Image 1 (cartoon, rainbow, N blue to C red):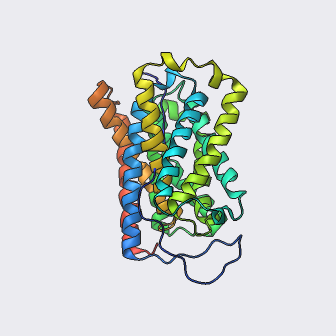
Image 2 (tube, helix red, strand yellow):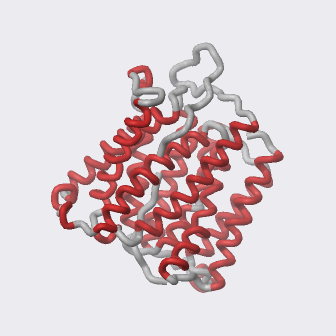
Image 3 (cartoon, one colour):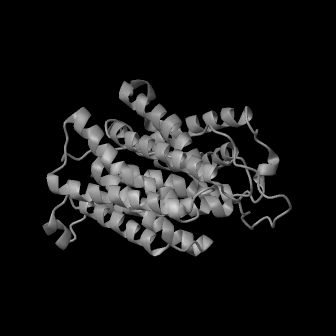
Length: 335
């Protein structure tokens, strides 16, 4: 399979979170939110949209990422996303000073998200969309671990088995279904770099729930992405790419990719994560990431004729089975 660069994601249009239970809570204590079957169903729906959009961003981004510096692209996409989220919030819950309780939360979340995207773009200079999508599917297992540390969410045995199965399938895809490469632990530089970014993304997911103080989803997303923009602009200015890019000479595919990841990816998936994280345990929120390699394979095969070897499909099948086990577990265990 040929190596290419790619883009990933993390929008917002939906009702705000249900109200928290009445009464004050300490400013640094995450409030508890009761979830109903309807709440959990909406959480699942949000994460299904997350999986479909993120897979599309890998395939589309792979055709544009080598035509523009990753940090310049990231800063631009976050600027567009901030404007979109600000507009959405203005017609919904609004942007209010009261949402800036414990304002340090947003730079922390923004730093994790910005670092994830920058590391991903750097990694994708030397790897391909399917491999990066496979690395991304390690997120649920890592996220569940961070959720235990931060929220004391304990995994039942079946959930632990499903996450382990999904991780094993992801590792098989990362090594291209080659037992010799796996035995030699011949992991590519791009996959290793992206793994660091994925670990940061996995930490980001439970932190969304821990640091939320009752802000509506759109407003919470706006402040988080605004902080993310600040980090991305600082990095792009430091590298000089923001000023060195010839914006007028960029091919059309670059602008398509920028607006897709800004509106469809950055804004939408950020909202989906935050919406779902308040309704589902962190490990189950990220379970939908297991769909990523499968959809990427389908899109790459249809649009580029780039189908993986048959042995690689075994790993993809394992990730799908893991996702189904997690969803079945959701129906038999409370969120």
